Image (cartoon, rainbow, N blue to C red; front, side, top):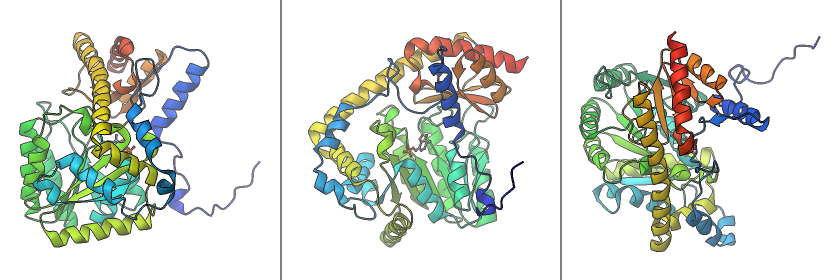
Length: 412
Ligand SMILES: Cc1ncc(COP(=O)(O)O)c(C=O)c1O
């Protein structure tokens, strides 16, 4: 018998789950595969090529190698390297009017950007609002800093974003907290794959503009997958203009997916406001949070990404390499959508991106039945998430068939 010891961990830290559930599923899939089974692992959100290897961009490796090591070895300025910060703003808005209303702070990936938004726009004990399907780490990022996450019902009867539910949620937060922090992850929403169309962006922006007239409202556009949407689609930019009439807009920018550079931990929180004095307060608040958390971010990564965003030759090559990756993903999406329709699967509108969700009466049961077929997906409430980003095109029919079996098992 072992003695029970008194843990010096504070109460809230004593029973933490040490690993993200997705990473645990990934580990199980990897161990079955290593034991010789034929396993299809569609759990992790990284882009793999059709040979099953991590897809990387040669221009990015070159940019990293070109950075003089003595520059990289020095501390970065606390809020980020100046060239990197201005490059992130130009990447989103060129030199247009939105750029003039923006400031930027470097963060370790989009995760760090969400962290800064949560600790600066919510008091301890308050909650952010997001859609009922959402990226799981929103829960731990908010929980770890003594805040919470609350949701609005994501899809209406017509399968579109439930705008009324979002408006009611924002009103509830304003009534209860005197403020609202909204987290929206479009385009290519993780976990559903959903992207807003023009009329949905107009509706979302108008609801937020009206709410901002009643109370302080900040909206985070988590743009992790921005570069994987149709490049012609600029509805989100018009939506930002509308939101800025009454509130604060924050963009969580990340190099993780844009440059297939997940390990470098390079991102930024771009904060926008129409008032110049407020922009000074935003700059100071975000810089303070940098100092209080990671101090300053990976300097090598910032210098390299700044070059990739501004040097015409490197930028041109990075854009065309990314186009190739998007094309590869598009091929998988087309095969998936055709197979899913033929198999009668129920899914949200899916035009591209790393993931798609398939609705099912029971996500856990469906994922379990799929694991019995050697196929790994992530279970959720009423759906499973499929990482097409990690699925070679030739394997997509196998996923569709496993989904058909898994959904049928949950329905029986
Ligand atoms: C919705 C969403 N937001 C933000 C991120 C942030 O990723 P990172 O911290 O690697 O930039 C991810 C990554 O998976 C994501 O899926």
